[in-house]
Image (cartoon, rainbow, N blue to C red):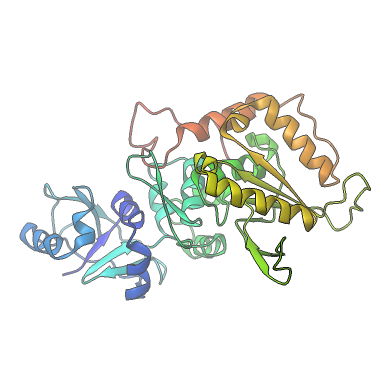
Length: 349
C-alpha cells in the first residue's frame, strides 16, 4: 500500500535535511497515483516505520486517483485527481512513500499561492536553502532540488493542467542557485520588469563558482569564489578608463558576515575579485530596505556596466509594492489558505 504526499505535506518533506539524500538513494520517478488511501491502522504503521513521516504535520495531505474508494479521516486530508500527470511527476523517498516532485509542487501550490509567492518558492527549489517551517530561518543544502530549465520543461509537459498560468507568470522572476531567501528577494527585484516593480537589470549567475588566482605566497594556487550575484558588461560596451571592470559582484551581507572569521574571508575574496577585474559591492538589509539608496545603487551598477541611466521619476509605487509583498511572503503561510493574509498587490503578467 503506497501513499503519495502532496501539497503542503510534500513541501514540508522537501524542507527536511534528509530529503535530498532520500531522493538520490531511491532514484525513482513515476506518474502513478494510488487509487485509494491506506486505512488508519495501515497509515499509523507506515508513520511508525518511517522517520521522515514522523516529522510531518498532521493531517497528511495525500493524493489519490479515485473519489469512491476511500474517505478522509483525522490523520489525512485527501486530494483527488484524475489528471494524467507527466512521467516524472512523483518521486519515491521511502518504502511505499512517494511525494510530488520539486517540478510538480509549484503547480499544486498554485491552488493557494499567487504567482509572486510561487516565484519565491521556486527560487528555494532552485536554490541551496530550505525555509524552516516556522518561517524564521533556513537550512543550507549542498545543491538545488531542481532547475529553471527543468521547471520550464515540466510546464510544457503539463499542457493546460491546473496551475500552469500562475507558474508561467512566475518563472521569469525565478533565480537559480540562490543561497538564501534575501538573496532570492534581491535577485527578483533586480530581474523583475519595471511594470511589476523591478529594476529590469539582468544578471548572469548567482553563487556560481569562478576560479581566481590567490593573492599571497601561493601565486599558482586557484581560489574558487562564489559571488552572490554576478553581472557582466555587455560585450559591445568598451570599458572606460575610469571604469576598467569586466563585471560586478553584488553580495548580500547577512549577520553571519559580521563574524570575524567570515569577515576575513570576505576581505580576501573582495581583493581577489578586484584583482581580476570584477568590482565588488555589498548590500546590507538597511540598504535593501532603503528605496532611495537602492535606486541610486542601481544607477551606479548601470553606469559601471556601460548601460544608459534609468528614469526612476516614475514607478516608485510599483517598486514599493514589490518590496512590501516580498517582505510579507514567507512561503510557509499562503494567501489562499489564510483569509487574514492580504494577497500580493504585485500582479505578474
